[in-house]
Amino acid sequence: MYDLILSNVAKYIQLTDKETSFFTSLLRLRKIRKRQYLLQAGDVNQFENFVNKGCLRAYTVDAHGEEHIAMFGLEGWWISDLYSFLTNTPATQNIDALEDSEVFSIERSDLEKLYEQVPKFNRFFLKLLQNAFVAHQRRILASMSQTAEEQYYDFIRKYPSMDQRVPQHQIASYLGLSPETISRIRRNQAQR
Image (cartoon, rainbow, N blue to C red; front, top):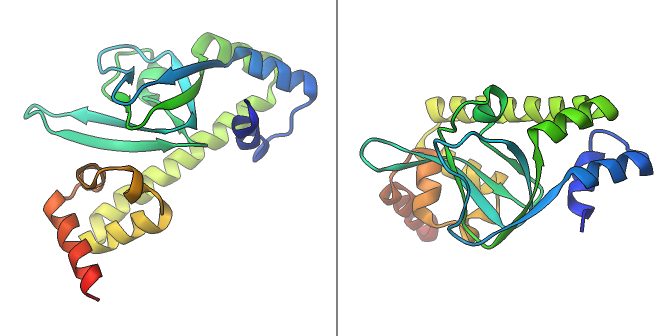
């Protein structure tokens, strides 16, 4: 049941059996049906979430009702409205399931206990934050310097199964492109 999250943790820190038991005792398994919210904008995010199964997305909705996807979360990924979680303020993002999904959630207060009782988790979550920052920075730079085609192909290279699991208009939203642009890129690819 905990294999995927424990292998994720093991990338950065090694746990004793006692530490593993304590960590897993703090996790709450949540089953999220397709289109069900894990978090709604306006609620304060109390959890860090690890995707054990399925696919989720974090997004905002602008004044015109248009969705802007900030991130996807697949198996083995963490997903959250980090700003809300860290500042204890209302979330600006919605997080919902694109497929029937399972997430392990750890509540803010339990995370604090984990930091106190197993200090190496400070390093683990710092590493996650660093990785998230680097990915965010790369995404911003790509959107400023790459063509639409380069952005799309980079996305497909980094996340090869996403175009099979996520509708085209959501990939377009994530990349800041129109669905028509994605269609044109795919059409050109097919003609090559």
